[in-house]
Image (cartoon, rainbow, N blue to C red; front, side, top):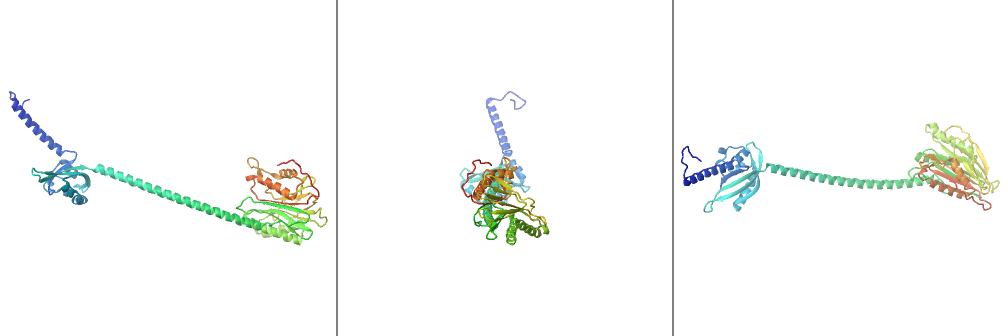
Amino acid sequence: MCRTGQDPEPSGTGDEAYINTVFTTLLEDSSEELYESAPCGYLSTLMDGTIAKINATLLDWLGLEREAVVGRLRFTDLLTVGGKLYHETHFAPLLRLQGEITGIALEMRTSRGSRLPVLVSSAVKHGGEGEPLLIRTTVFDASDRRAYEEELLRRKQEAEQAREEAEQARAQAEQAREEAEQARAQAEADRARLADALTVLQRSLLPTSLPAVPGMETAVYYHTASADQLGGDFYDLFPIDGARWGFFIGDVCGKGPEAAALTSLTRYTLRAAALHDPEPATALATLNAVLHERYTAGGDPRYCTAIFGVVDTGTDPDRPTVRIASGGHPSALLLRAAGEAEYLPTPGGLLVGVLPDVSFATAETTLAPGDTLLLYTDGLTEARTGPTRDSLYGEEALHAFVSARAPATAQEAITALTGLLDSFGDGLDDDTALLALGVPATRPHTRPTTNHH
């Protein structure tokens, strides 16, 4: 290596001195350059905080010039108001006590007025006799860390908010469930009270029991399709005089309170009409006039189907005479003691209450010992049957069912039909009334063993 353009080469001792000088110079240059351009900020202050030295990195962060800082500002002048307060109350006392403090979070202010979050570590440097000379401080930019912490805090707050919202939603759902449960319980209680009230009202529209008819057996059954609605089916049996008894069965249009009002009017009209003139056709004609005048003529058509009959035991108590008239009602069935069943036709009867003037025909028969007269409403014949519930039971099937059980007493006939109604299940969606009047057999009879449905 040549130091100048001349030779000869230097001796060994001179070379070593030269090399040492070069390395010392390079080391000093490298140390100063490393200090100035370090990735963190460095500064040294006197014990009163006056800045004696500061590197370019920290000056660049703060947007300050060296001449305006060194010897002119104290370290606390670089801090925000909050930073100064924390430095005076915590940082400086700890540094004096411990001589060194590491990783304290502070905020510095830049020349642009913005805040720079930093982590500060300081150490007191002592002289040869142990006296404190200066404070060396290292400053790390904590902007990324602050952003990370703020993001963590934001996420934590979002998670906490989500948890609170979920808790509120759960509480609201629980409250809604409790309210729904209370509403359901209230609805059940209201429904039960309504059902009880409807049951009481329904019973008020029907006789509590049938009177005893001398020499005859009677039986009745009423099926309610819905506990939530009043049905329109009705029946009755009552004395006219010492030898004659009136009876009727029918079905008014509609459901609910309107049907109940129509049922009540129909029952009392037929009873009153029978006491005035017990002729069946006349009683139905009276009912027709009342219903037409009360409802249809006023623009609110209300009608019913009905069979009205009179059983007369005066001529021959063992073979009473029965006279019936029908207003659009299904024909009555006769179960004969001989084991046969037949319909008792009542032709020409129209719905009661539709037209102002209607003629009703009367049919007459005699009940011999062992005979039973069966009356029913159309809920029985219109019950839905079959796998898809799209077929009606019908009068033919009813005739076959009753024929297979004739002869039968009034109670036996009602019991058999009650079982039939139960067999329809959900196919029976209309109220059904059954009324049977029979003359006891004078001697035991043998019932057929064939059972048809």
